[in-house]
Length: 97
Image 1 (tube, rainbow, N blue to C red):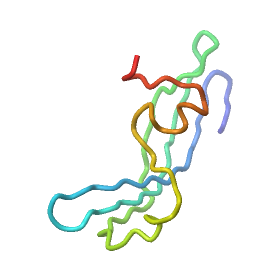
Image 2 (image 1 turned 90 degrees about the horizontal axis):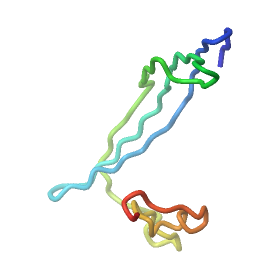
Image 3 (image 1 turned 120 degrees about the vertical axis):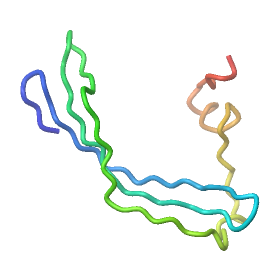
């Protein structure tokens, strides 16, 4: 972060993974490394993002041939209020009221 009075610039690195399930052919997984490059402004005492650029440093898409962790004793992550984090963090899923 580079702070200059009521304006600032920030750079945040990320690594993202997504899985594309296919009805035919192998599932695919995409990995991407990048950065958010933000210009921020302080208005009425609150910092807000004025502009955001998403920079792709590298990415790769691969066919999923095998899931070596499938049979390990992990709890599957869920995109719902039934995910363990909702109970642990005492959260209510937005779609559950």
